[in-house]
Image (cartoon, rainbow, N blue to C red; front, side, top):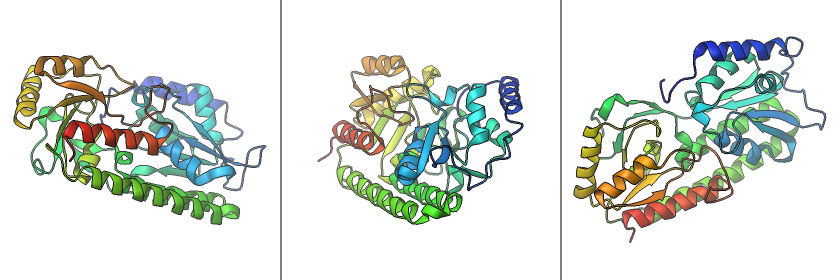
Length: 318
């Protein structure tokens, strides 16, 4: 799926080959019972949403490494041979297919037994530039429709993924299965409470429409009866067409939109230009692809609550 600009396949293949050459002696050592020197299960997470699940569920029994370091735009990640080496030596790999093409290719060649693709743990839906209860069944603008991988921004779907990750860790490390099960239940409970906060907070609003540079919030919009209008679809770095800008100006006026949202890991230029042209405010709606010192919170739960507060303000929650 062409979610973002793709890293050239030749570059990926070359990096993977280089990385796997160094692993010829250990690429088959991903036995579930194998632990690192500290006696912990080695878990490699592709990016922050997978890292958070591994840490919350694994607790003290896992050592989690993430391929996408803080501040790096995950879709544009280029893997180094050392990172590919970490993949081949992992006991468990957690990733989300369709977000990072370079990671998808490297994982496919790493051959780790306990490899978990989060997209198989819940149901994906097709979303385009527009997502919302009024747009079901319509064709998306500018050819952006496709399987939307941003499942973690819906607490309900994220909880489904958490359960699958918990089961995978139990299978990989049966000696600590009871702890993984307990931690999974605790996390699912937290996500359930977060879902209730969103349901309550967004139930009565002056408008249901929000405009964002990054069309990452389709699942969130559908879950809570909102309408997402993406400026440039799945890729916040791409330039919207003049026709799309005109559409958004009309939508903002018709639906009484107050705010144009942008994210911390991508340029806010387009959002600010549209806001200036339409007399709107700007604010951050974080797609939670990474946590940095600019994030409005220290972890997934805190940043999602910040997103809720921003949406309540922008939508005129009563």
